[in-house]
Amino acid sequence: MAQTAVTRERLFALRETIAKLEGKPVPALAAAEQEALGTGNAPRKKDETPRFCFGIPELDEALEGGLPLDALTEIRTKMFLDAGSSSGFALAIAAALQHRAEEKNPVLWIADKVGTIEAGVPYAVGLKDFGLRPELFLHASPRKLEDALWLAEAALESGAFVTTILEIRGNPKSFGLAESRRFHLRAKSAGRSLLLLRQSGEEEATSAHFRFLAGPAPARERPLPDGSMLGGSIGNPVFHLTLEKSRNPAPLSLFLEWNPHDRQFLPVEQPAVTRFPEQRAAHSGAVLPASFDRQDRPKAVGPLVAFERAS
Image 1 (cartoon, rainbow, N blue to C red):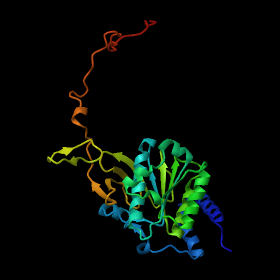
Image 2: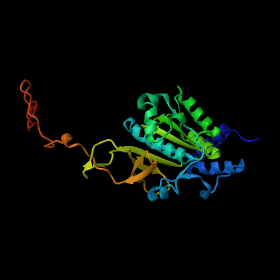
Image 3: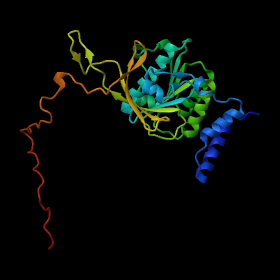
Image 4: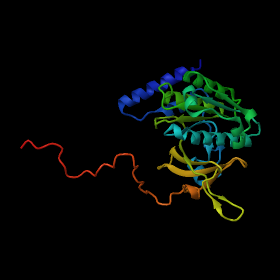
């Protein structure tokens, strides 16, 4: 009789504990491959893995040909202030996948209730401007994280979505290495992708095939009819991405611009922080005079002793 997913996870966790006690490498991937071979679901060859190509040689090469569409991919941010960057990057990938797919399957966004309070919810009008179809976009916000994990696993098993986005806050105990491995294997067997958004999370061990660190970046300057360039205005979103987990010896850092009209990514050089002319200070670091009805500025601290010495 085939083993259940819970039994397999307990077996993997037990093997990891024994390996740590013996000081040996953690055989997580080896155990997963053996389990797949034992159940007859052997992993496919590298050239048979469906992938999403960004069209950027440097990034596609680092991703071994592109982002795998039957695996778990993690996108994290350091702070909640950058939640828009990770969310925008995930939505851009979803829009590109939906545009390229022959069957227009919907996109499912599952958000942790706590993360929704902090980062907000998707906006239908904004989704359309971003390149997505609102009628093919579903959003769910379960009250408990356990319910969100169950819903994400059920969505992968159904195979009804072009991709599933799971948004969680930080590094909860209920979603660790064992859970990420279970989702990775579930995505592998279903042939569907799962994008994990870890808002305001720290680096931790994960079974995700790749992990990105997403951050904001200013939009590029736009050309005006008179030939001049306008900086500091609203333009296409630009993401600062760092590929933290991959087979590369060093993390890859680059800037990508999302074109919602063509639904494709474009590489850009590191954009400079641009502002409108009236927003630039004439004298950087100018010292303002003290207010007339306030106390004078404190005098500079000199070589003074607060109390007399005892001797």
